Image 1 (cartoon, rainbow, N blue to C red):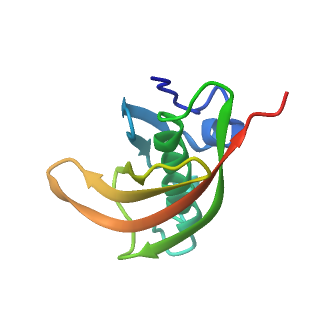
Image 2: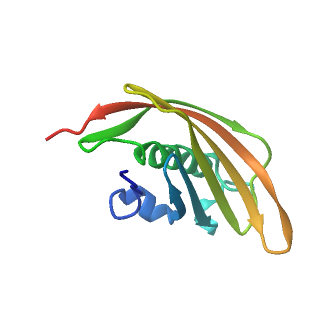
Length: 137
């Protein structure tokens, strides 16, 4: 089993964002982001681009855990539903593979807002389709 977290060491944008893996297992991953002022949009909520990035990158990481050596995934499409304004101390993304495939893999990602002492809230949900390809030499 190839358990991979394509995280900060491999993805400079993810390193700049501050995303970290919290749990990695076959077909699933949980990532965490401590919210900073530069993650906010003009009204002070966490920017939809941050939520989309978490959902997409976490989905790719979940799919990557099921790949054979020499394979990689690239996002072919994703749909992001923004369910409520995102605010909190942390954003947590839980991604799990719904349907692995030889050419396409479908993953579901949920992004939750968390703050100490407050029940967490689901702020975004994504369905991500990833193309499984041979890693270029």
